[in-house]
Image 1 (cartoon, rainbow, N blue to C red):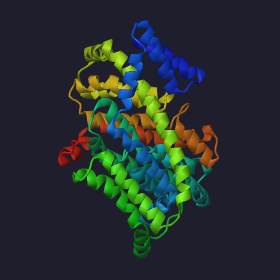
Image 2 (image 1 turned 135 degrees about the vertical axis):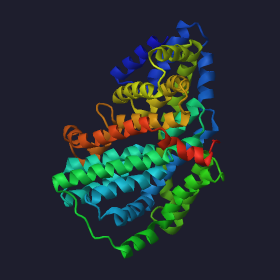
Image 3 (image 1 turned 180 degrees about the horizontal axis):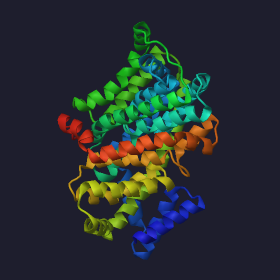
Image 4 (image 1 turned 180 degrees about the vertical axis):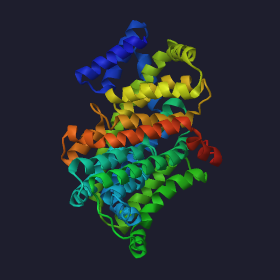
Length: 427
């Protein structure tokens, strides 16, 4: 049954069929071969999307839309410039720091690439950055947006594996910051080699002015993270609170959007949410078929026969996910692979929340690699560069991300100590 599913899935990819429809075709074929009534497919697909935590996805998507158009993103980028603009690399460092701010609110790597890239790349070119180098920095930093909470991939992982989304969010904070710092170090080195990026003298008065302009925007991540850690609300409720707050300051304080602008934002949010839910519905059916055919249990036994050492097991799984990320987008890869891999890693005592963050990071790297990398294509469009030149410029950053991957595998405590400290468990 597993081979039938994989065969249909890769045939769908080769034919250019959307992944969600490919999963639907696979589900129907598997049902016919198993002599199972097709009504079971409807029942299981409804079960897959009948989840309260799923409400967080459209709310966080809409938060990203509001902050991009409502002046929040621009003010956060201004604050980032005042904070790190004096470091060698200039606007390159600003772009990465801005992505850390932006990713901590939008939860989407693609949104991060489009928003920060359109703001930063023209100015970076004026500071001596080549177009591919400027685009590479803005594109690669988008992976931070799916690690630092809120994170749409982590929400999906929590739903399909029944892991606490709040715990996943808290687990993503430290590795997200570390990944951002690794990219900043790489930019520091590359700016010295290419003599790109103008620095400006650090001035406390400019930092204070930028802070006064952006402090209302900074309250957004405090609402999300502080509310979850403090037990004020769950991750889903945090999404609603973040949306209400972002609408309040964008409409009434910054006044850069009006009520008429909300209609377009709602349409874009509905389209993206519909894509995610359709994918999740069919993936739930596939997961049910694989479970009743004992596929996860068989995989656990086969992998344990190879090794029961957590470090080696994670290296094997990481290599597998990197290959999957080359040929499949993050969202379908997450909802398909997470239920299959979860029993394998938990069988050797690996924390489910730790593995969720690790899996999101690895599949996030796939967003930056050809031939399927979504962020790579968005970056090419925003930066107006060819795929070949962008990939070449990103090689040092690929190396930095792989080094961070090995570090997170070797030292899982970097991910687990904060959720363990705060004892966040609920959804």
